[in-house]
Length: 201
Ligand SMILES: N[C@@H](CCC(=O)N[C@@H](CS)C(=O)NCC(=O)O)C(=O)O
Image (cartoon, rainbow, N blue to C red; front, side, top):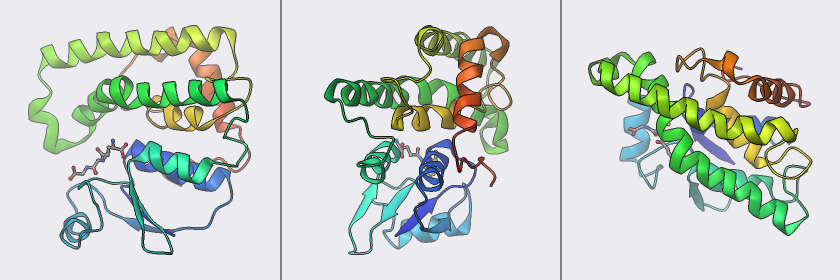
């Protein structure tokens, strides 16, 4: 397998993290934002939706979208719940990650960290993202006050997916993580999973 992966991106990191947690070997092709490699990968048609990550299988099939890749790689592992309701709950969190969490938590971090986006980081926009991000982190906090993991009673793909951008929400995004003790305890639990790797590993 070959993974086209953007080193600084949480969406790519979540796939690298699952590969490590499940002990799967995979060739990694780095396509950093603004790099020649990214342009080449797009030109060569390696990124069907024009975005990373994309997984290329040995038989030539390609799979874009980080959470779809997690499902492909995660089925049958300890991160794939046997119970149908837990599995559907895992999916709920993964859809929520893409349609709500990522568009606020990751976007605010990108506006602060990528120089090319600095001109888009107006005070009004940053304040709006801060307020909305804290509300989203509160949703996670409420679940994690009463449970160790997001879906069911064990770590699932939902935890891998949400960890990716949440673990840098304070350092990169500027969110006030002290307000979310249950989220912080959960971040430590995910970081403590055997074979966990960091964003920069
Ligand atoms: N929903 C997609 C989002 C993918 C995405 O937005 N990738 C960004 C990096 S986080 C990218 O490839 N940006 C490069 C570009 O747009 O040229 C996923 O979860 O895989």
